[in-house]
Length: 330
Ligand code: ASP
Image 1 (cartoon, protein in one colour):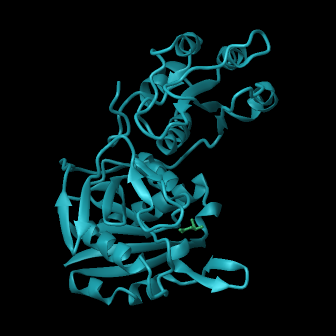
Image 2: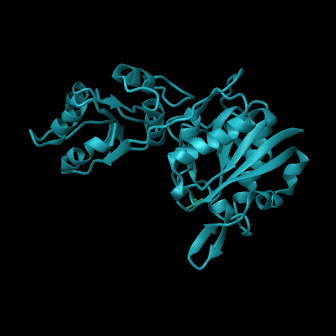
Image 3: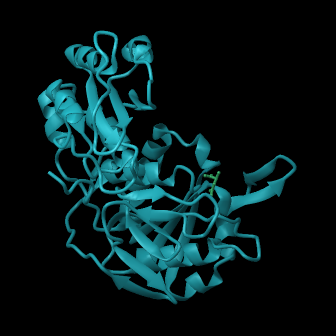
């Protein structure tokens, strides 16, 4: 029987009702008590790493999770992390860069309703995750939720309340799970030892454009950040309104050695700054581009890269290198 480590970090799945609303209070061993069927196909040990609403999860917690897995890597065949849904896609992306080339699966899951509620999605998600973590074809970081298996670099929380909370963005699901059956759509080989990384640089800022936004803020905060992601409109471009405008402000950031990356507010199909003049002009200033990468992956990837180097050419090369399906449009 495969041996799986269940790592509990909190979230709705582990929450109870309190007078101040849902709060993670259910511990890892108790989570397992709700899925007795798991004992039929795997041996599970539980680790209570955190007990937080995922609103409070930070990149330091991603490192904690990666370290916890590294320390126990040889003792288990797979890992299931119970996590809040709100920032699960960021954690999945973070872990995809912190733990690379892992032949053993690392599965994140959670629920829209606490595990102690009658009409919860928690039990099925947890069972599906344990089942997927036992399956020979699974490896690396993924999210198992609502019957979908999504690569850790491709997930986005798309629905705030209904059970099918996550979609895979600009990339197909790796597999689906229904009635205990796993149907694989994408398989690949993975062998050898994983690469574990231990540092992230969280000096990454995200700015969402709205029509008429003044670039003043960028000047005020530029010393506090090493990289700026600008979530623009459509396939990408920057408003050009002269010396005091956005394009000029971004050019100044690049001149000062800051990394500026263009992303799009449109969830599907990604950016392509070559299409419009407003994109061309911006790209000429030295901007990088997310293309089909999710925002969550771009944020986590920059944090991972900037922890390793401040060399601009290396940053560019690393950002544009595909890691675990994160970027296909090159
Ligand atoms: N606020 C919760 C969290 O992210 C939501 C959830 O888990 O569904 O921890």
